[in-house]
Length: 338
Image 1 (spheres, rainbow, N blue to C red):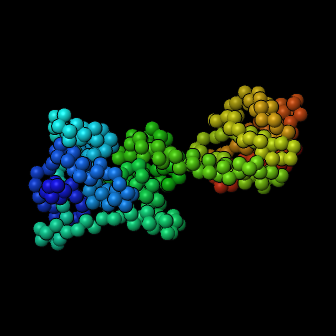
Image 2 (image 1 turned 30 degrees about the vertical axis):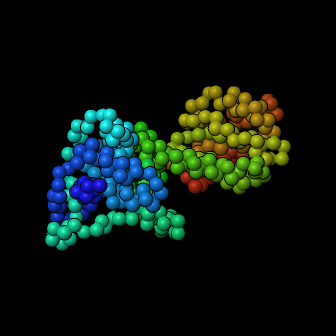
Image 3 (image 1 turned 120 degrees about the horizontal axis):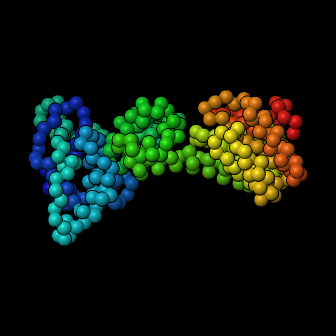
């Protein structure tokens, strides 16, 4: 393979003097490189090395190149296949082709030095395996996560940008999908990855409880309810249906929105209590970003739903309110006589 082409693609972003080592290759030339690299197939360590040595840094960051135009990735793969097979015309110059290809020199001597970022992704993964996330800063957590959604760009810079925009890791993960997917350098794949994390976390916690736990106290009810609301930035009302031994039959999200704007609540509650053969039920809802204390509306709705369930002889055992990592029990606080 042409070594000049490799040098053009091995760009390192730092303060060293950039020197020109040949003409910027076109996408047709890049296709030959893609074939040599095996279209980024192979082991994870191989791919990490390619990402580190080739396009780990932001390429053409100001050229407006979108996720789909990465060389050798997505749409470019089919074009490369046509050119390699001799069946397609060489594509015209793209925004990616028009970028300069700076390289690092050693102390301004004009001698190209080794890539200081080589192996960075692999080292980050190995560090996580050995240490977990406790020693990682917030931007490093996002950087590591984005490795799997953004293969060939500098995810460190992207992670910093997300934290500056949203303020915290949790706020990034709870951000709107449409907003994330239209953020520079994120795109659809990385946005889906970010949105998966809180969803998988909720599923993980719920799965651990799948052996029908017995909620025989307000403490157990609160501990069961907390993970139902992980990552939610809107209000959700759950109906937890219990059998005669206070074991969970089903936890059903019956409403999303604001608790005091739900005239259909009694009907939905009664229907689901009957559907899941509830002997008794526990209500649970969250106050996203607010106080864990019960409002007057919370008490009024609880009494209204309790009256509706009395008609079908289903007892209300408690109402749990969750805010972040805290919860309260209306039964323990004596707000409603259950």
